[in-house]
Length: 203
Image (cartoon, rainbow, N blue to C red; front, side):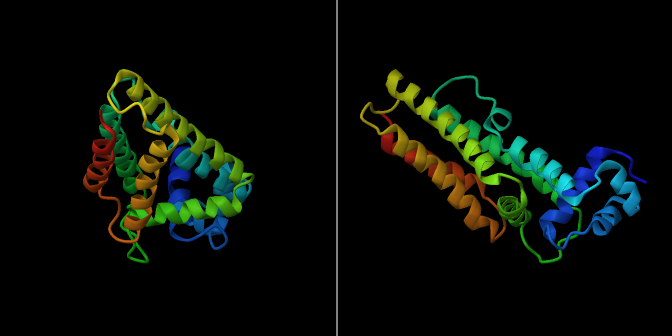
């Protein structure tokens, strides 16, 4: 029997991602955890409390740039490579958690993660503000690195910082979303596309 809160969260992650919030009953989640309903309630009395804990850990903490990227300075090109490596590391971790041999719809595990993200917007309290804060942190990270690259002469001084940050970010998000419907994000392709943008702005 599972008695570890972390294992409860991992199993609940799989249930919420592959089913959905409305269909995923406490009984279903408890069964996935190898617990009785009352055993699960020992950890989380209400489904929403469990959902919030899962989302806080596997979405908001995992995707927070302060946790996801550990870039200690350097060039924009170095950050691009670091960004791709960090995305790949995060993706491997999430896919590893979701891949328990149970793939009811035959989707990529990246797709199940996006499925969970959509539910967060619907069922997580004040999700809009949480996502806005998360995206702003990511924008700021890109803006700061692009500004530094302009100051150092790595990229052209006339480059528009906001638009350039948006291009890098939107290629990542767009490619991630599109390829989730197929076999999951190809980080090699992501790297090529980000480096292509870089080639257009370098000094």
